[in-house]
Image (tube, rainbow, N blue to C red):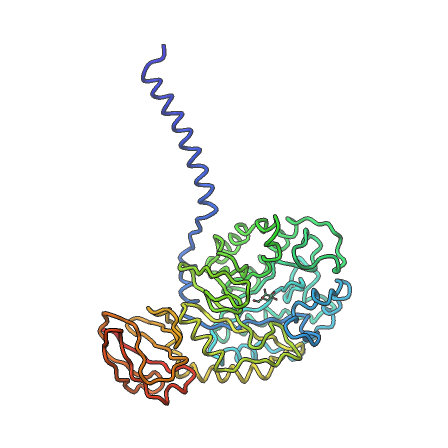
Length: 455
Ligand code: GLC
């Protein structure tokens, strides 16, 4: 006879089994979803947000082609001109940037006010700009330049206190196992229409491991090319969890950034936006989702090209670049401004000049950007706000009248001054907020910054 107690026990056991399978399922789900950044990682995020400004560098064997007369297609020339691998590979042996001087580069980048750099360690063409043991297609092979560009850069970065991030393309037009092909790199490359996808991911992770172990502490990785498979089943076969774990295990502070243009995946630390301010989508591929958990970063070209272009001289003015940088800061975002060095190893003189001008601007206005976060008021037609402790910075980018009302209620103002020269700005507290009276001549500045100290 079954005792009531046994029945109770059995049914409890059944419940327990059900419960534990539910728990197993949810823990599977949470293992996917829950990513708890380490203490070091959270500190690195703070550092990143304080730094605000970085230089992006697109440099590779494609720089020799200088866009082939088509602005915008530089690092894509293998794809756009359908150059097969056996022809393209020759570029790896003729790339000879004898004027490359890492120290000069870093000094020049630093002169702009930037605090970190992000450089292409491998772009879509698959060529590694560093000494890779798992590939013969790299800068250090016998017939190539023979110097490890990333090593030289890292040494210069350490010397000048600049952080180094590596761009790494997940998409690869050269590796035979990058198969199935996505929306790019189809038949022309000369690769067999077969390959072992997982072998490619192993190779990718082996390269990442090299970058994580041979170059000291790095700032993190900036991934690109995920979108090659956005429309097919391989969309979820990048093994991101494993890759991101590898990075965080080896360098817990390293920030993972992925330019996939979709809502961030677990394991990512910064949400990037390409050619658009967060929330905007002029480029046509950016998500309007903005994370309120992670740092943000906007990447932008100084002209219309990422890699060096011989013919693209549509350079944005320094004013426009500064205003975009400030617009990013007001949206709580970093600004990553791109340069495409020339094939001899020099930075375009136009860019070097712009760095100096930006650096001059930072000397006066740096405090309103560095170490700030997005201010309490969202972007307005006249500009943005940033904040740091009790200071609120009102960035007036485009305004013609001396009176400007900042719609902030219930704040007690201790002072309002011009950041440019410390002079007082008169103000009234009105129903609509703080009505500033800005000297008209200040509005000729790229950014008239008023610092409001809040009691
Ligand atoms: C795009 C381009 C790529 C470039 C990147 C930089 O993904 O395809 O060439 O490196 O943008 O943001």
